[in-house]
Image (cartoon, rainbow, N blue to C red):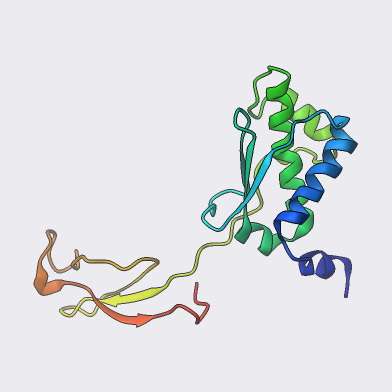
Length: 170
């Protein structure tokens, strides 16, 4: 098992996240950052993490970190800690020049954005009963085919053809 495989094998959980937070706080911030409430979210799917410095809440995307592994979890926590560090110093806490400078100092480099976020898989295939046009969706729908009629028409209402969940289709 190579190092990358081992890194992705480590289970992503809150204990690991808190351990990273404590380690990074000690190593990069002289243990001066306040304790944050950490959350792993299955609903956070468009970003790797988010912090609310005033309430000291850091939310981390579970799907993202399960995909990219523990090293990326560590990087995300460190990134969010820089936002908190700036806030605690009463400085603008966005991706400012000072943010970028601190990011370089702690070894994150110039990368500001998360890695590409894997698309959520489709769950359903619907078809128009009139023209047989098929669409894939992530949610159940109650609409009609726009190819057959520009306004809602129950004669062209999409019918569920197939439920894809569990098939791993993207």
